[in-house]
Amino acid sequence: MNIHLAATHAAEPPALGNCFRCPRRGVQTIRVGEISTPGGPGHTAAETPLFACRTCEQELIVIHQRAHEPPARRYVPARPH
Image (cartoon, rainbow, N blue to C red; front, side):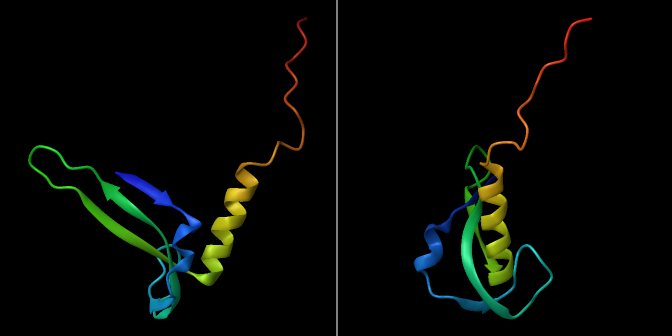
């Protein structure tokens, strides 16, 4: 199974639906990605779109930005005794 989140779906109009990340239901959502499974012998490929509410969309953007920031302190190896 692969999970792909991207901000490229932002051009799609928002719709009322359920957020995949939080328990909010029937709120304005936007498509933020998909879960996909590859096809193979005995099963077919499938793709499930993921929709997030605006609050969770902003939280996902912050998580992404923080994941690519340099650490606050650089790693310093221990001195040999």
